[in-house]
Image (cartoon, rainbow, N blue to C red; front, side, top):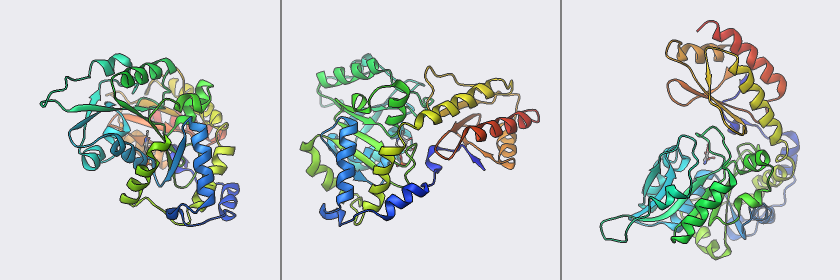
Length: 342
Ligand SMILES: Cc1ncc(COP(=O)(O)O)c(C=O)c1O
C-alpha cells in the first residue's frame, strides 16, 4: 500500500525504536522522567519559547492553550478551515465555554486587518475576543506555510489590543524547512505553541505545548485535569528527541516528493490540482463534476494507493517518512491508469 492518507500513518523506524528501548525513565506525573524533561527543554529551545510541556496529542495541547487564555463568554478567532474550529470536537466550547469566530480564508492564512476588523467594543452584549489561533502550516489550506510578514502582522495587531496568540504549529518544522528559516524564528513571540511529534516527525505518540515559564503551573494542572499526565513517558520522549535530531532536515525530501506528485497529477486532465506558492508535504486536488470521485477512490485503493477524502470531490495526498520517490512514481502510474477509467 502506498499510503498517502496522512503523515500520521508513519511507523517508528528501527533506530527510533532502539532509542525508545534504551530511554532512561521515571514518573513523569511527579516531574521525575529525565528523558521527558530533556525533550521539553529541547523543544522549547527549537520553538523560541521559555519552556514546554510534553502531552499525548496536539489536540490536547491546543485544548490546554485555549483554557489558559479563555474562559466562559470569551471569543477565539480562527481561520474558517482551522483545525481548532473544525476537527477538535468543539473543544473550545466544551473546555473553556468559549465561542470561535471564523475568519473567511480558504488558504488558512489571514492578515492583521482580519484581527483588527474583529475587535469588539467592551459592552455586556458582546463576547470578549481573547485569543487568535494561527495554524502553520495550514492543513486544510494546502499545507501552506504562513508568510512571515503576515504572521508578524497578526502577532503585533493582536498583542497591541490585548489578545493572546496561540500557534498551532503541529507541522511547524515543515514550515521552517520550506521557508528556510529557523523554527525558533517562527515560534517566538507567540503566547503558546503546539508542536506535534506524530506527524511529519514520525513518532508514534506525542506533542508539546511550548509557553512562557509563568504558565507552567497552570499547564501542569490542566494536563492533570484532562488526564494527560503520564508515568514512564521517557519511552515516548526518547522517540521525540530522536526525531528532533534526525527527522527535521529530511522533511525537505517529503516536500520534493509532494512537488513531484503534484507535477505528475497536473498532467492528468481528470484532476484539478490546487496550487500553493510554496509546497510542503501535501497535495490537494478536486475531481470535476463529469468524473466519478467514488470510482477514483475505490480504484486507487484497489490498486494500492490510499488518499484522504476531504469533501465529496476534494482529496488530499500527504507525503511522509514512509514514502520515497519510487513510491511517488508508482502512485503516479496507478493514477494514470485509473484516471483513464473514471
Ligand atoms: C493542524 C493540526 N492541528 C492539530 C492536529 C491534532 O493532532 P492529533 O490528532 O495528533 O491530536 C492536527 C491533526 O491532524 C492538525 O493537522
